Length: 159
Image 1 (cartoon, rainbow, N blue to C red):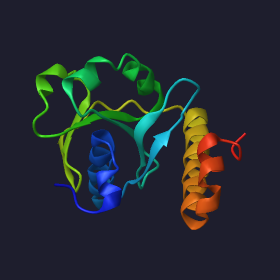
Image 2 (image 1 turned 180 degrees about the horizontal axis):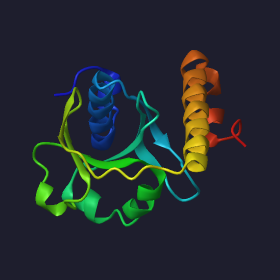
Image 3 (image 1 turned 90 degrees about the vertical axis):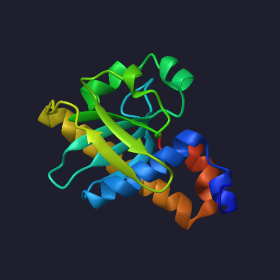
Image 4 (image 1 turned 135 degrees about the vertical axis):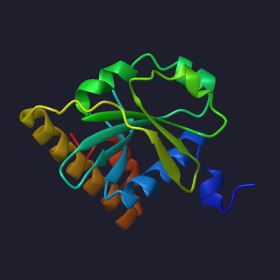
C-alpha cells in the first residue's frame, strides 16, 4: 500500500521517475520531469550532470507501456546518454541492448547498464540547458505559488 495521499495520486511511471531522480542526485545529476526538448517529444526525466552531461531517462511501467512507445528513438539526438527505467518485474529482454538500463522503484534506483555516449553538439547543448533551466524555474514557481500551477501547466506563461 502506498504511503501519503500525494504518493497514491502518482502513476506508476511517475513513481519510477521519483526513484530515478533520487538516485541520479547521488551521482550529482539534477533532474526535471516531463521536459519538452522539441515539438512532439516529452521526456520523462532529463538529468544534467556536473560536467553539463545531459541524460534522458524514459520510465516504462509495463510491457504494453514500452511497446506503445514509438517515439523513443527521437530522443537520442537530444541527450548524451539514453536510459530506460523499469521496475524489477519488467521483462528487460525487451529493451534494446545499446541503451542504458536503470532498475527503479519509487524510492531509489540502480544503474544496471550505461548506454553509449554520443556527445551533443555545443549549439544543441546550449538550447537544452536553457530549456532545462526555464523548465526547472517554472516548476519552482508552481511550488512557490500554487495559484499559478494551472497557468504554468497550460503553458500560458511559457509562450
